[in-house]
Every structure is written in structure tokens, then in C-alpha cells.
Length: 312
Picture (cartoon, rainbow, N blue to C red):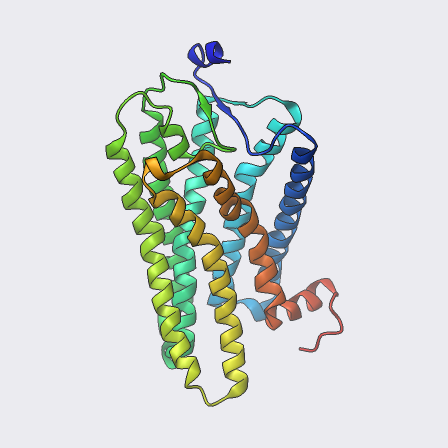
């Protein structure tokens, strides 16, 4: 394999699963998760599109989150499953760049979108009279377009920069997708400048938004605590707990992975943490936002004719 690595521009993805019965079981579980994520996010997009009651800024943002999650999990799982079943772990230089670009685009865009969703809830609960002004349809469109645009630009810059490094060592990437930090370990030049860029980007797109989200929800919790309506407090706490669950599952492993110095990282730990934000989170988002949301469950009943036992 070492000879192949030095005579080809392609990479090898060492993968996540062992080639044994345990690996087969885990692969079946991952394929099930992929199926649930695909169906759940597709259904969420369809519901928000066809049900007029869900045509609000919060649900427009949620539909974009579902779209990002759908693309997110589709970037990594099909290739990983194909490699495991076929035994062909190679990925072309261009294919690695394309996968890296889409992965980073979804990662950065989703980080910004979750910040917009937190701001939406902050304005709705803390400044309800100003909500139509601060979260108008045009403002919602701007935040969505901004998230996609900034995420794509940042992703393109990192992907192009990373692929310009000379890879004169082994071409075996110890990961289940073309993760840039895992690729940098194979570069035969000093990458400290680029690693600093990764640190800055992670701070701008993940750490600072996470701090902003935490601060906004802290303000929201303070406002909710002083609500007179018990029903309003329960509804607000339900919404906040739902959003915070999504935020923690997404940001925590991501920030921990990308902000650690190279000498504190291990490939095995990075791959396990990556499972949370590439595989589990895309499945959990539609489940969390539907099972904890009466408006979404009502839309499911109206559109698909299920959960008919639920009241509006």
C-alpha cells in the first residue's frame, strides 16, 4: 500500500469501522440512522413548504437546517458505506476536495444558521412587539443567504488552500471522510500558518456563535422566568430546551475537535467525535424539533394524516 501511496495522487480513507462482524453491525446501524435522517429531514422540508401555518421565520430557518443536515449526512455516510462494503477505500484527489468543500460548507453554514435561530427566539420572547420588524420575511431571507454564502466562501478558501499542500508522505487519511486536519498530518511542509487559519475560522464560525447563542438563551431564560403565564413559561422552556439540545450536540464535539492543538489530538478520538456532528445530529434534529413541537405534530397530522389522536 505504501508504494501505491507514493505513485498516485489519490488518497485512501482508512474508515471508521473494523472489518469484522462488529463493523457490519455498526454499519447497519449507521445506514439505519442515515435512512431516518433522510426521511425525517425530507419530511420536515415538505411539511414547512406545504403547510401555511408553518410559514413563519422560525420554520423557514428550520427548513434550511433540515436541508443542510440532509446534505451534511449525504456527504459522508454513502461513501463510508461503499468503502466498507466494496473494500475499495480510495478516493480521488478531486473527489477528496469536493467532499471536503461540501462538508465544510455545511458545517460553517449550519453554525451560522443556528445562531440566527437563537436570535429569532430571543426577539420572539424578549421583544415580541419588535418581532415583525427584526425578523421580517426579507430579514429571514438575508440571514439564510448570508449563512450559505459565508459558509461556501470559507469552505472554498480552506479546501483550495489544503489541496495546494504537497503530500509526499503516506496518502492514507486516518478518517472516514476527507477532514482537513487529518489531511494536514500527511503534508510534508510546515502547516502552522494554515492551522492558525483553522483556529481562527473555528472561532469565528463555531466558538463565537456558540457563545452568542448561550448568551441569548441566558437572556431568554431570564425573561421566561418572569413570565406571568404558566402555559407561556412551559412553552418557552420547551422551545429553549429543544434548541439547546441541538446546539450542544452540534457545537461541543466540533469545537473540541478543531480547537485542540495537534499534539493533543488522536485520530481515533477525532473519528468518534465526528460521528456526533456528521451522523447523529442530522438524525436527531428533525426528531427533536417534531416530537417536542405541537405545531409540527399538527402539521404532520394535517399533511400525512398520522397522529390523528393529537388535538390542534
